[in-house]
Amino acid sequence: MARTLRLAAIQASFGLDMAANIARVADLVREAAAGGAQVVLPPELFQGPYFCVTQQERWFAEAYPWREHPCVLALAPLAAELGVVIPVSIFEREGPHYFNSVVMIDADGSALGLYRKSHIPDGPGYQEKYYFRPGDTGFRVWDTKVGRLGVGICWDQWYPEAARAMMLMGAEALLYPTAIGSEPHDPSLDTALPWRRAMQGHAVSNVVPVVGANRTGFEAWPDYPGGGQGFYGSSFISDHRGDLVADFGRDQEGVLAATFDLDFLRTHRAAWGFFRDRRSDLYGALAAPRPA
Image (cartoon, one colour):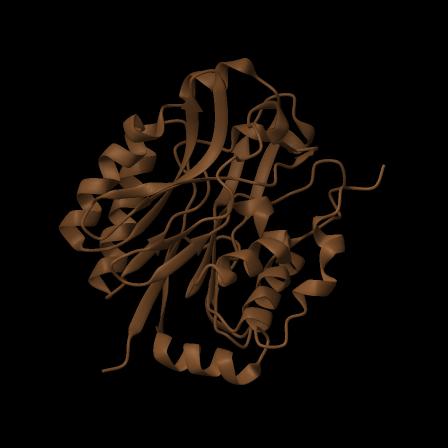
């Protein structure tokens, strides 16, 4: 029998109440599982509002060691109950260090480990360098009970090197939890389509399904340009051709899902020859130090 994998993405809005946010995600995970999903991807940092819009030290109190994080403690038993894989995005504390991380919860509820976001943005509305250290895990791919999954986090999704690295490690699907929307320094700037296209490009050049799960809604912040940050949703699932096989608009909340034939994709990937024809002997510039 062919190996198939049904992937799902959650799109939702989130508030200040962590317990309510976790309950909202849990309800949507149940909905996805009822529809046959084997992997359910929530958005980035769903534990609360996207606090990186400004620099406020009070948010450090919302970080936890990854094994003790309320999101992990709540969703691991749910993963076991439903038999689904859940990549859980968290604000992680390790000693004096803080990271933007994903904990991979397998379909039996076991925590397979974590990935710490490698690329940390720093700009208006996305001041993550104040809160997070650059990840020290390297890119990660996990052998879950349903397939080999690679996960990047938001800003990682703009980097083709990250996607290719995960594919070279054997990923059969690429997953990106995100939190992205308005640009306070330029209200005319709308990155929704480039955001999608970058990941659709990863799907094409790696012959792999890609899932992007974004939050939606408006999060009010006093004394902030425009009164707060709006998130543009637009979550999607792309097939190996880069075609959208499931997608949301900007304001919808709920679950997207699509099924893929992993055996077909493995053969099709070999037939395209992208990995056969790689010239790693010519790629030294990719690992060279950044220019001054």
